[in-house]
Figure 1 (cartoon, helix red, strand yellow):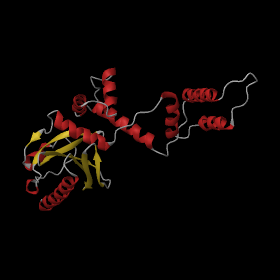
Figure 2 (tube, rainbow, N blue to C red; figure 1 turned 180 degrees about the vertical axis):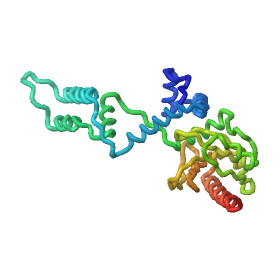
Figure 3 (cartoon, rainbow, N blue to C red; figure 1 turned 90 degrees about the horizontal axis):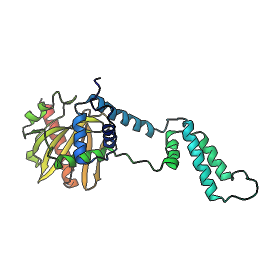
Length: 270
C-alpha cells in the first residue's frame, strides 16, 4: 500500500481522529471524506479505529490492565480514601472493608469495559462515539450545506446507475419515482460507517431525501429520528438502505414502499 503523503503529520492525524469521533465541522469533514475516497492508507486507519471500537464494545473480551494503569488507579483510590477518612495521630489502621473490597476489585481488570471505568477515575470522562445514524444525518446535512448534493445530476436512472461503475464495489439499484411524487435528482459517492457508499438523491415537495446504500446482509427495518430528521432503514438483496430527510415520517415511509416496489418491478423485468 502506498504511504499517504499526509502520514506522520500530527495535524492530519488529529483531523482523522476528530472525523472518526464526529467532531469536525461540515467543511473539514468534507475535506477528510474527499481524501478518504482516494487514499487507501487513511481509509485503512478509519477501519482500524472502527475495529478497535467494535472490540472494546464486546462483552467477551478480557484483558489485564498495564502495570502503570493499575498503579494510577490504585493511587487514585488511595487518595479518595484519604479524603473520605481524616488522618489520626494514632498508628494507621487497615483500610475499611468497603475500600479494601474496592481495591481488590481493581487488582485484576476483567474486561475492557471495566478498564474504561478505571480510566474514568484517572483521566476523566471518555468521549461518546457517534453512531452510524448520526454519521448519516451529518452527511445529509453537509450535502445540503456545501453544495455537494450530487456528483451526477440527472433524473435519468440509466445515466445515474452506470455512473457508479468503478467508483464503488457494488451496484446500487436506481429508480425514478417521479410518478410517486419523489423525482430522482442524481447521485454521488459518500463516506459513512467507515466505507465509501452510494447516495441517491430524491426530492419531496422541496425537501431533499438522501438514500444511502451499501452492502449488508443483516436484517434491518426500522424508523428513527435524529435532531429533526427522519431515518428509514431496511435491507434487500444483500444491500442496506437508509433514507434520511427533514420531511415527515409518513413521506419517508411512503418513499421506502415506493422504492422497494419499483425496484422489484425493474428487477423482474431485467
